[in-house]
Amino acid sequence: MLEVSAMDIRKEVIFMANEVLSKMCKAVIDGDFQAVPIFTRQALDAGVSPQKIIDDGLSAGMSVIGQRFKAYEIFVPEVLIAAKAMQAGLEALEPVLTQSPVKPKGVVVIGTVYQDLHDIGKNLVGMLLRGAGIEVHDLGTNVPPEKFVEAVQELKPDMVGMSCLLTTTMSNMERTIKALREEGLRDKVKIIIGGQPITESYAKKIGADGYASDAGHAVDVVKGLLGIAKSSV
Amino acid sequence: VSDDKIKEETIMTTGKERYVTTISGGKPDKLPFFVGNYNNFITNYYGITVREYLDKPARTAELMVRFVEEFEFDQFLAAVGYILYGCGPEMGVKWEWAGENFPAAVEGPIKSEQDLEKIQIPDAPTGYFKNYLEMIRLINEAIGDRVFVTASILGPFSTACFLRGVQEVMIDTKLNMTLFEKYMAKCVEISKYFGRNMYNVLKTPMFNEIFLIPELINPRFYYQHIVPYIDKVCHEFNLINSFSAFVGRPDDEASRKAGRILYDALFGTKESLEVIEEALKHVIPGFPFFVAVSGRMLVNWPKDEILDFVKKGVDLVRSHNLYPAISLISVQPPSPESAQDVADKMRRINEFRNSYSL
Image (tube, rainbow over all chains, first blue to last red; front, side):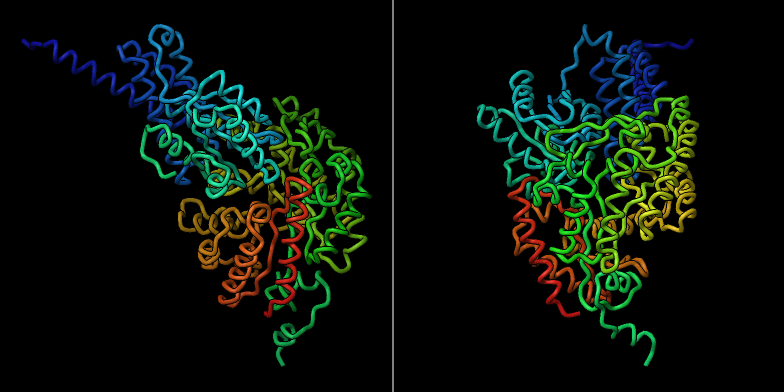
């Protein structure tokens, strides 16, 4: 007669949970936004905590996406579709998040600076940051310095991320940093900037804490500045 | 004396001849000087508003001619401004204005397949596209005999990005290929309409897919699902789709890397001598190798550093037995004060190219 101990059952449950998380991770990478919520519910049924689902399922998948995008192995459509899959997973988690809230790894406010209406780069950064378990507040495009200031006062983020596409608008990053300084908020947040005309030396010149050449690197820089992982800023 | 020798020793007199000689792989009389995007320079340096730039083609054309003559460009991309290229409000695209800057497209009219029928190709140019063609006509009339004037014919992929939205097009490539193929077919017809009208005012336009950059889309998808539509337009007008040179071959990481390096060097996305050196290993036969000066360089770098970079870049290209050119990729100062500074830098670059011995 086969005897099944409590330990065996526990091992089996852990094995099943890990298998579901692994499938969830792969579904995010594949951009399978129909499968991800199913795996999310299966993981919840197996007793996996929302935090673990986010960390080992959804974020793990998006982390692979970020790395592959950075290495030019995948392209913008793959990132967008993976982010859509991750979002579907987060929505499936929503009902339980009120009971067991998940603590984000950091809070970041992002926006495209004043007089600049371009948003794809900023959107990609937002998606990949969310995928890394970071709470993102997207202020949109054409964001004046005072709106960044208000957001920092209200949301008390760890970091502000500014994006621009045009050389004609990059000076608004400096204006925003100045506005934060004037309100006594500069030292309360880290600042990262990026966008087509931006360079590391420009970031240093205007007093930003970090610069990223593309969305994939932005996640590494943000993680580094937030102390989540090592990074070369 | 061989034909090549004669070609080499021909004394060039106009920028147009200089440009043609350079792109044919010949030796120009002096370093050719090209310019790409410059719309914010026109508004900030010559003191007109963005609205005037877009709405008064005769005035804008006059200022563009002044620009070319003042800085002695040999090749000129006429009438820069995304809203002008054919997908303005006249095609149902929603454009948003942000302060005193040029407007940006924020929403396209294609939400579903049914919307495709609503997009009508006009019998004659209207709206900003009409202004665009008028600017090009006037510029070509004024300087086309001595400067190589070109202008953008918007390709079908970029037309789709305006009419559908860039992010939406990207997602369609994964989730809704049926719709993608339908609007791409429509955009081929729209792009041909742009081309037909362009040829009424200029015989030397260029095919331009402004939204295509190497990291945007998988090379395999590009060749299988975008190039066939591009080819339909290019074949119609005998135009070259030069972007393919920067994509590389699918599943060939080395060629993709080479394409990206070339793109970085020639379009100023990474301005460094190391990038030029690396790119020179992948030179496209018959394509001019220009030292690219980016917009951020012109706006932010000190004058002497820019000149040092240009001089070293030109020397580097010459050391590979190629005839270089200098290309200002983007001349976009953010203010009138910055425009004065950028103008001074451009004058110094022009002085350098006039004094440089090939």
